[in-house]
Length: 135
Length: 388
Image 1 (cartoon, rainbow over the protein chains, first blue to last red):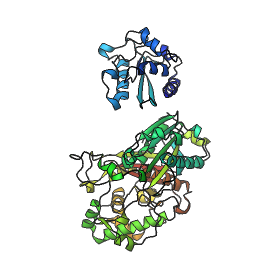
Image 2: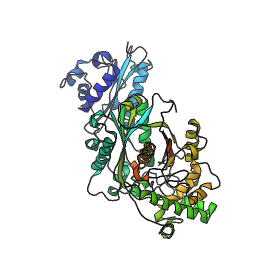
Image 3: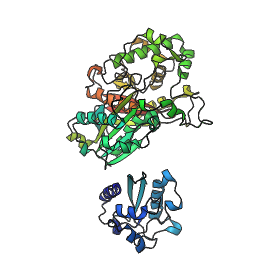
Image 4: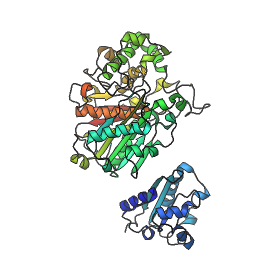
């Protein structure tokens, strides 16, 4: 799966060994609900086949251990070609503590994800940190 | 330009550019250039970190061809970028690869530009890019005769002679380059008597529609030291935009070439381009543009470049060789055209361009790209490593 290749490469560059623990939030490109558990698995947040369990556990809710899409994500507005940069902007706001009503507490390290291709052939994963990240 | 680290060209590859390649598909065309660059660079495809891939999607009508072409360029599972900036695609590929290596992100980046024009309709692609109401003042492809009209008004018959002379010079050079598409034996009389397309632009002034691909491998300084090929260093590049829409009527105002040249000369201490730059591979799709644009790149206001053309100063063994490869007028696979300029410039610096090698030591070479809504990309390459 190209997402796991892309994610593993980004984790290696950023020195992340346990994404679920080391990330404070993730903004991922979910254009249809079925993609969410799939992308969890690709990103290594859940074991293969366990993406749905992670979703149902509530850990990825805004108050969970690893909030995913506190912005509401693309299901609430999908500026197609801009979605990847919008995800990055969201991470930027979160890491500056300026995400207002959707702020994740003490966010230090964030993941942004973009995808293109009807079968998810092409993924981009970016890791952002603020000056408290990586410590 | 300030760079984080130096970048070198460590290999170049091209197809033989041709009007008909029914024997292969687009991916196979790309594969030919990739095989050529791997042979030239003596690098294993597995060692390439990132692939930058570009063409004009509208011309073939195939969306996201880079995804199909992973089977041809080895990009499967690697980082990849797709670039489609019109005529400048090839030059922008080089700028992108330069940045990707210079930034420290990757050590080995392969840039590939290609076009298989026989599988599409170029003019249809171009006219559909612009809004018919606001952005399309003339129903045409990218190339018009407008510049020729202005050159004739300004300089009269001398311009007519120079445009024909320049085209003959390109044909002479192309016959020395076995990869060129049109390797025709023509005289000035042939050009001047060829069919009028839009006065004073004639059929033989024009570039062909070609099928072709070109690939270049870029390496960081540390990596380049370990590689077998003599590196050619990327000194600088600049992109200058001016018009935001397709304005074919006011093309005589095109001043992005002069602006780009001014920036690149001043940043690199070039006060006398004719002396300091050994060879210039110019993106000039028809010879009326050639004779006009040379004046812009060299800051001549009174048509001095026309005398130089008629004098033979731009010949392969002249004072300031232009397009020893035969240029765009001899081969124009659009997405590859501007990257071919850079590859040819690199070959001239290495001194291994074969029969079309300029008979002198080339320390600095200039390569231009032109396209999009009339913009210019300039690359300066050198034999010596730049001071960052």
